[in-house]
View 1 (spheres, chains in turn green, orange, brown):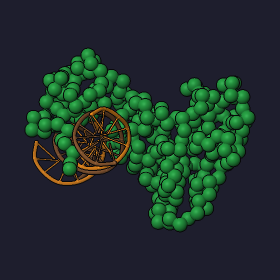
View 2 (view 1 turned 60 degrees about the vertical axis):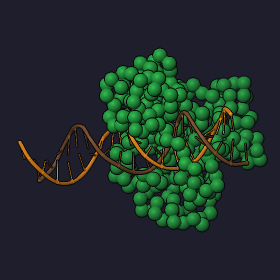
View 3 (view 1 turned 90 degrees about the horizontal axis):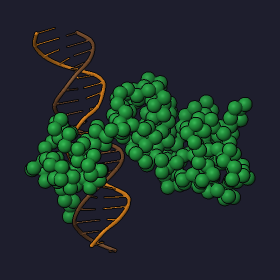
Length: 265
DNA sequence: AATGCATCCAACCGCGGGTAC
DNA sequence: CGTACCCGCGGTTGGATGCAT
């Protein structure tokens, strides 16, 4: 059975968009809003398929897009998010206001990949190049999840490490180690396990930078009050937001990883 | 100036998830 | 439950541009 074509290809334009087409699309979406892409081209008088219109709008015409070069902060955030999420460009884009998944994907492939390679890091695994090959072939390595809490004068940082014992200690604390989870625990689907933050864990943007107390691994997976839970968050006063600080998930220092916000564009 | 190569990035393609029927 | 449809995503392509020779 096959899928029906998304549009009448014989009657649609392809290739670069003209100024007139852009104007038509912008005018239509301003008047009617986004959505119903399949019927939009006809309604807007465009000889394009709906997918093409959607892509043009999202990647180029949207008014909230941030044009221009990526900052160093954005670079590092993309690297961290990629190590956490892999090639989930839309989720990564959700964390970078004004950037699109396509833009980030292109930027990754043209700039950041090279940057990581120059650092001797495998862009796919975020591990040193001379190790990533060995790790990917070793499927029988036993994995132990360990949480390490480091307290400094200013904040507390928890590092979760699934790394095999061959990984150097320095790398455990400087890299984000999700891919080893995926490699060694293929059944563990973090996207399903990471739960939305509980109300008492919500933080303001200015709080996100400051770090704070930590959740244990069980809580980070949404298993509060389970027998595996060993953190102090459950004893916190849930009515006191000032004690309700986020978990520095894999060093992102962005509070509890709010999966919903990752999805939001 | 002409040519070839490398890089960038907008756009396309195919697939999977969600959902209405 | 199966099918058809729509939407969104990730991978890939190819034209445009920049740079070196």
